[in-house]
Length: 189
Image: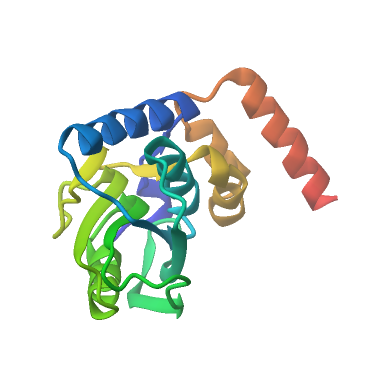
């Protein structure tokens, strides 16, 4: 799909994420959608799922761990469930949350798994979605063609693509950039 030197990286600041999720929560509430449980697709969906839990007042949060990428831009043959659902979803209205939907295959796999476990209704949320995805989530902040980098995975990006990848991130303030470089220096000593 991607080659390292051709990946267009896009850093997403916290404010954009949180404001986007607030707007999504408002839409869910206005639509009268009842959510009984939230399922985070690990590991990218952990943080957005926790924020949605707070915004919607949903205490029942579970996780399913799926692996599809070996590293930035390098997908495996198919997504694999590494750890099953951690909560029961039978007879519940479920919101499945992930950070990005790229091909749509991970979300499709999780939707099938949640359905197989007896969920009444399934809604999907991803912070960002690629225009070529086979699945459009019910809720998302916006589409992007770029490889999205979140505040919670900057060092992971550097491990995968090298420290020079930091220079390619937009929207990152200078102080954050310097602090991350200092941290990476500590890690490699």
